[in-house]
Image (tube, rainbow, N blue to C red):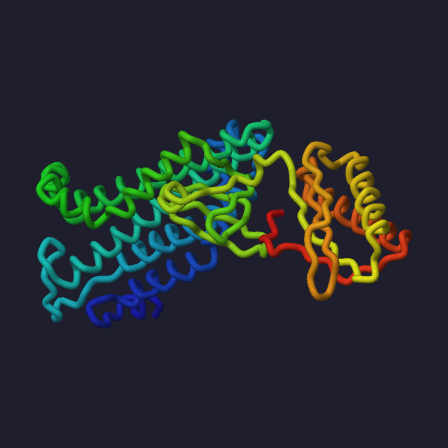
Length: 366
């Protein structure tokens, strides 16, 4: 009974073939996650001697999706291999253009892409290992070098994959194709002009080192910490915690302020006192603010300015300028707050009162 059922034919295939087809797909859907873990463990065994600090779980997170796609491609290939196109459909052979060729080459392209994806994720895993080791050193140059080499390897792998598909799948003469690029090289160079300029910009950043990963920089109206320097662009985490991508050419060509290299933080503001304040009171207030600022441990003694600056309809204005010799932003805010409280006390002590205090508008160069 069962044998008779399995031998039943429908659209050119037996029931047994359809059962195999369904069974292979169901098994693949059930076990593809387990197979992904086993394959990841297999890869990790080869990389384990290099990854003493980055564990298996990191590699599994990176390889889970590409390995899942790769396994399901193999599963579908094995499943469809159990079936035949009905003879009545008169499809041409796989060597001639038609549905068979399109399906077969689509499968090959998807397979190459999935393998390329796996290789790129392995490169990312090596990048994690090297970035961890680079984080243990004081210099930031090696952090930048790791990112640069990782991006370069990815570009090489992608280019190699494209040429492999052209040669192995579409049976093109890759050597002739590369030689033929010389004829249209000028057109390609013009079309890729901006990309080439950004690539050269990345080399300039790497060699001149105007900044490294982790530096706080200001370019135009953008202020933030450098998180990644790539072939085409640099990614910056702004003080508002947004993520900005700037082309490397723009960073190289425009003025760039590396705020991480500054030695001091400047503070400048105007104190407005009421018009009832007498000249003797003003002199005493200015002298005491000068002494207050000059005696502070975290303020540079050479560049302090406390002056009677101007008069306006609402107030008598005292200019205060000083430099905090600590780069840490929180320390800078603490110093400003401490000075401001003491200025209020000094003004009250000498019988005057504040009309206003004006701070100049400036970006939060944290």
